[in-house]
Image 1: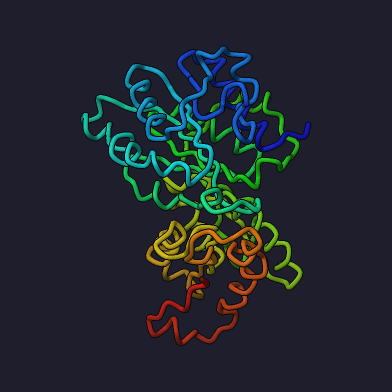
Image 2: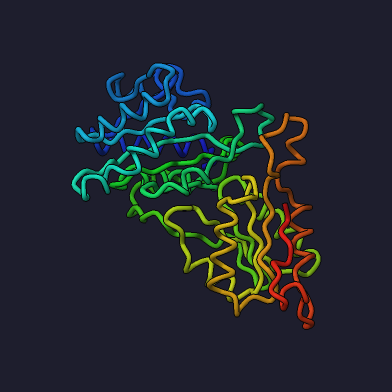
Length: 344
């Protein structure tokens, strides 16, 4: 049965609320309206307004309230309407949500899921299309997850809800209406795997394309296009940014010898830069060419008519693949210690 990404998220919360009466859902317009993207549609009706309810338009207050609820034994799921709307809550997230376990020497955990619709590709304006994963990934004490498939939308959210630590759950807005044949009822009977495991979506032999969330469809399209030129791309979906599956990424790169990291965020000091650094440091002797990155530009999110220039696309990834070393002669930039260039 065809299921949308949005419906899988809804079913994950629904199943968690059915199994655990301590799971609550709240945020701006998540009750009667069902959220701006209708991800919580029907939860208030089916579980009551004491389990799924609206809050004032105050993101800092929403997260602060969730922290208090979690300290009282509940498992809150809170929704930020848009990525950049979550910034007023960042002080609560960085100063308290991320630090409570450490501050209390492990005696107080905060099992909170902060759901954040993020990234671009929907023709949105500024403050509605930010790729904010770098802020959260750089904050010790948080787990950061971004699904790219309908199945992962369900399974990763279920895993995030039962996790004892706070999880920033980043939902690519452009994927909400994607659909595939997934039986969430069958998934609900399987053991829930822990966070922190990457997944190989397409096996390959020549180059590893590392992506997560909104960049995964770009990696898949690139793999198809590159195959026409005789290049076999392995597509690896990170799934969990923190904790990060070093073993899966390094194993893939050591087999292929080449790596391109695709992210929608700005290139400078981002998650993609961290992934590239980890690969370069830990798989250096397996690399036939420098690790390249294809990312968003280092600018505030542009107007809708220009977002196609800002966002990484198939042509830019194919260009990066073309720049990898494909012969037996050493690249002088690499052998002399240079970085080999980074795709902006």
